[in-house]
Length: 197
Image (tube, rainbow, N blue to C red; front, side):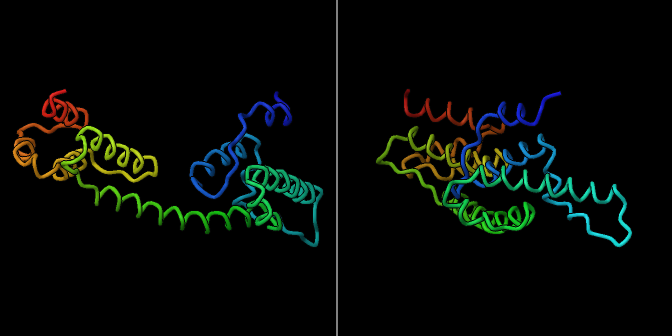
């Protein structure tokens, strides 16, 4: 069985959390903490002291305290120095985790609205190469998926067709009235044919 030291040294170094891409960092950190068998302290309360404690009660509380210390240390170690300074005084891993989620999930929700707005407001421009713009909107769509914003591909294809430049009115009409559904790859092929590549 691998020792704790082996486990921690064999993990690929996590990128330090600097204040963005919280969900990605959080998932990686949670995986590490789970592998170390200390993630439970984020959600489980510390065993309370009782009047007639058994040795098992004392042992359980001691284990929780030790695991909380390890968990806090790994979370802090996964942060930039600036964020370390902000969160180092949290009394438990649970408190620290909660503070991080409160702050960065709200920012993530705001970022998602911004991403959706960017996609919705995108318009093709006759003065720029069409395929360059198609790849740009495709990147916007991929960014939405990376942030767990799921949109039906048929909706996305239809939306992109609607965003084609005014000079593509005829092509827009042909693509809209196709009997079969087309996916993004097929749409790219149609656009390539139209631009003559």
